[in-house]
Image 1 (cartoon, rainbow, N blue to C red):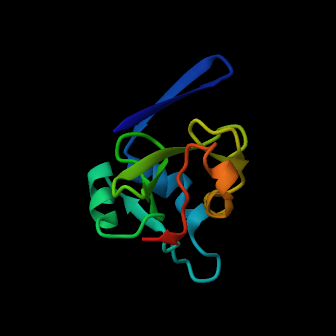
Image 2 (tube, rainbow, N blue to C red):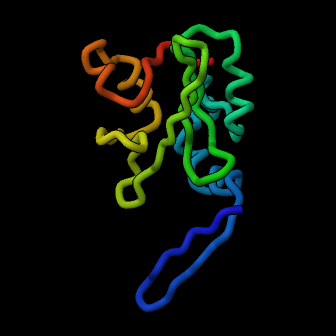
Length: 139
């Protein structure tokens, strides 16, 4: 259960909801295909860090999944590294614009799909300057 507080005029409203409720109320329509209603293959729902690592176990470096964080509002990009471990990058949706950003990075993206496309195309030179590991195939 997580709480968000918003001030409006002279009042403060706080709402406590689960990650599942946050996702269903604010995000599911943004991820669903407008034609089929399906969610993208790279999206794996609400998973813990450990569950994401289990799904990526035995996969090639660069294999990734996006999950709803189980301990905060937002997403995580979980990526299999070359050394066999997994990296987990928090993704936040900016409240003012609705755009997405990997926490610690400055590049803002209009959608999760655009964020993933950006990191799939990062060239080797800029790859070593960013925090996110190269991604190439959804889990």
